Length: 506
Image (cartoon, rainbow, N blue to C red):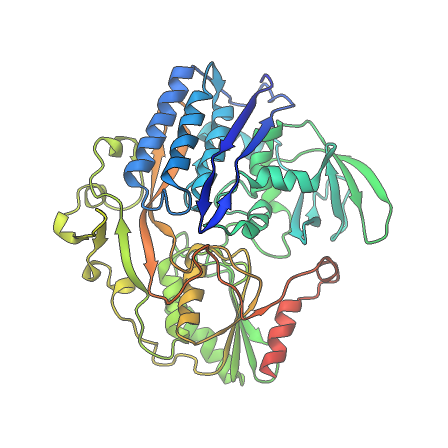
């Protein structure tokens, strides 16, 4: 692939009252794509047609398209993207430009999937870093590395990758990462681990921005005070990347395997729920929580710490069942499920999704209550689990509860945390979350396939408005007690957030 260059102008606008200055961001591919990679050349006309379809789908369906970025700014972004397509372009380069544009919407559920051919190729061909990492205080720290190459010690800091400072790479690749609202602090979590894309957003986007390197030249500091050293490692494929240890946390875990509990002290129970994803290997969420809490109370738990720090969301049933198991009173979870439209013209010809297509694309108009701004609220009786009153489980935990939160929280996790706090039921300890306490644009996702490139655009159908008071309008939830992980903590294996929470229960 020839070197390509694109300047993307982010027009002046306002984000929740904060001025966004005019900025120009430039990126270029500097290495070639392997000859075996399934990259196709598109004509400018074909690429522009794909962008036009993407824009039409977003403007027709997306209920939060202008929620955090103004209509004028998005119009300019779409127009700039279309005007940049002046000649032949590869589907890989179009994917990069589309991803960068979609990130401006500031919705974690609005993103592009690479072509199926590229996904399959990268699964078996090397394009990933040969190590797992965390970003702590802006530092890239190794969790584990490829055992078939020079092994990097846990906690080693990566300073340079192929001559580029890691801090610059984090900033550059972070621009491609969709976040909710102004929760830019959550980008570090997605760069290190993202179950939606190909392992981690750093690995996912690196080849599209900088090309597919034949090797990674790393400048490393093994420990604090150690001298720098330079090593050369080969990239690995996604299949092998998934096998790398991530401190015992599996990639794309299911709710049933990511829910654990134990006693921390004589009377402090601990419940960890790393994901609410309960659709790949479904289990009875309410029964699992009931079992956990009964066992903890039988062991003497009088107070409870619920660890949601790794939880990005997932299925409603798993999130709602947790709130039911901790609630002290009846509650309503959401005040509205709001759609931008309920008829989509010919767009269903390009859309794949789950559920009954006729019910999704031709619902009865009397299923909705029109809003004053021309949108449609789903009638509460059609979604009773989230729009009608709910009640605590008969054996809901009644003791003091602390919930551990962090920047990896988004979507359904942040919604559950917001509701528990709104009920005055929990103390929050940790770092500020991602997501939106007001409620995300989520629910059913329409996967719009761009006909010429095969790129798929994820478009959320509903704006989910939570029944909570005074959510932070820029997104995220601030903890009651802020605790930030440090490089020293990570290297020593000290869980400062958990330690602080335990002290409050003693």
